[in-house]
Image (cartoon, rainbow over the protein chains, first blue to last red):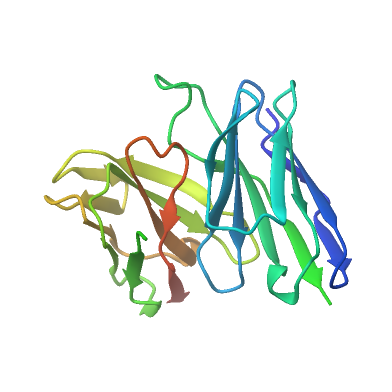
Length: 116
Length: 112
């Protein structure tokens, strides 16, 4: 079975530009979360979506937005890119559970964004 | 806000030696998870602990959750070169969905 897939795997942008990252969860998983991982640090929570609704938002500015589609895939959008947005953006899906989803996260390979 | 700290940041061991990483949260957790990230890879789920004082084992790995549900540890017995990577703990809270707070990780290097 396919794991969580993300695209693109690598991209380079300049300050002020906009970026869209895409994620397809594991088949049957309805919850998708986005994390930012700066080099040398642990992942930091950005968003969670479940059944197309936002279920959680981390401490990120409004330049960051996301959505989930009817097929449970998701997009993360970042506007007005800053140098500090350079990071690995990880998407994770969670299997169904009693509360709708479990806490277990299955991460994709990530999208490595470099902002120049 | 909630903070999760891990020590040590780095650990070099000789193959066959034991390894332990410690995780401490500034707030009480509902659960703690552990992930392993190989160099250049993505985090891979290892285990979730939910009960106070819980101990779980996976082959050479032993995971503990503290009685106060604010600290945890991962112990690897007789390390192998395949254990190389960064180990992250991640704390979850009730009603917070998949919003986990990750520690900074412990990078394990194993000399053959």
